[in-house]
Image (cartoon, rainbow, N blue to C red; front, side, top):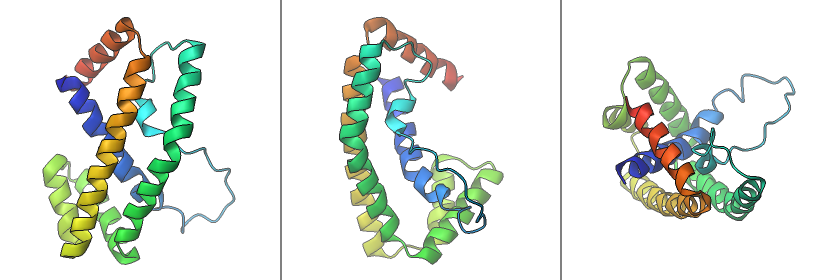
Length: 163
């Protein structure tokens, strides 16, 4: 249960941070690069597991079902902050990472740099809760696809990453 909670938290952080960090280099590079398909973050924790063709097909169906909802929430989250605040957030995240700060300490550093209004803060909190609930639903559906052996392997991998 603790491992699952850790994986869920990690996925939520990645889902929130990815769109913010993805926009960082777009203005600087104008060379035409082929766009990579969007990453379906909740399915990433399945990497390394040997899924059957049937399981892979079901993961794709889950992805098709939930990706529009995830994208919509990401878009709403991006619209809460002004462009200047998003830029300050990116810089603060970069600085926090370089300073070796993690977790609450890093988030406090980012919040201090962004200086969201109370209204923005409430919207972000609400959207993060909504995203968390959606991620929980997705992970539940993905976990239901796995065999007991695959679930045990996933737990072992998560335990190993903690060390």
